Length: 92
Image (cartoon, rainbow, N blue to C red; front, side):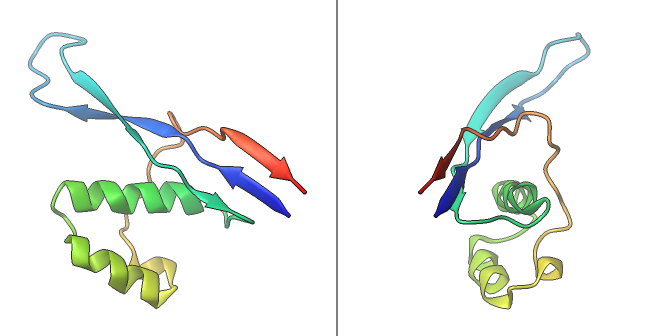
């Protein structure tokens, strides 16, 4: 068995103002564990969760998206790779 675990990404919040570096950065940890992943799968999951947090999607939309088993049912937002990291891989 092979398992992988995903990482965390910075999320800008608050009013960025005019000054460079004025944005606050908060970190959200999203842990994804599985035997295998599709291309950009974790980025799509994170992007969809961010859209729920921003109110673009409702929390009840998550079950609909999961049940659909279709990438196009999820958000069109794909989280950028920057900030996402593979934490560990386990082989049995």
